[in-house]
Image (cartoon, rainbow, N blue to C red):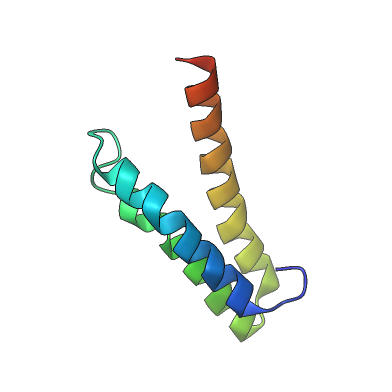
Length: 77
């Protein structure tokens, strides 16, 4: 993202795909877990189009969700 190369952001989408499949099997995330890999894809499209702020918004949503999920897991609530 910092180098403005869409290929690295697409690689992030592939890395989030197993997590999305895993979360898709849980009742809480069943219907919208497949959106996780689409956030980096949207960021890559935004980088390709030159709208870097929109790409950062997509990635911040993804980071915030991942951070929230890690907090829920590690704090045990």
